[in-house]
Length: 170
Image (cartoon, rainbow, N blue to C red; front, side):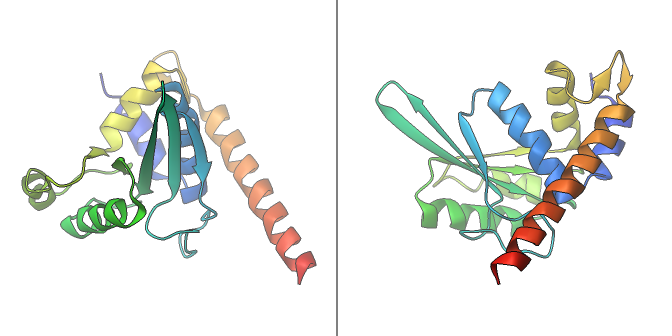
C-alpha cells in the first residue's frame, strides 16, 4: 500500500539523496554491487553518460549490468528514449528509470514500443512501496523524518568532502 506522505518526502530529496536511497534499496532487492557514477548534483554530468547508477551482479557464471537513470521530474518519452540509447551504447543488460514523481501518459503508451532492450520504470509510488517493504525511511505507518534529516546531512558532508578534495587536487 503506497504511503503518499513518503512519496511526498521522496520528492523533496536531492539527486544525491535519491542515489543513496536507491543504492540501499536496490542492493536489498538483489541488484548486486551498486556504484554511483560521480554525479551527485543535478547540473553535473555522470562519468559515462546518461545514467546515475550502475549495478553489477553475477548469477552463476553470468554477469549482468543494469544502468539506472534518476529523473527528478515526471518521466517523459525523451527520458525513455535516452535510457534506451544508453542501454545500447553501454552494452547493459537492462536499464531502469527511477523518479519520485510519476510517468506521463504519453510515455506509458510508448513504453510498450521499446522492445530491443529491457528496461523498467519505478515511479514515486513504486519507490515508496519498496522503501516500505525494506523499512527504509519509514517508522510504523509513517515517514521517519530523522532518517531523511540524517540522509540530508550525510549528503551535504559527502558533497563538501568531495569538493574539498577536488579543490586540493588543483
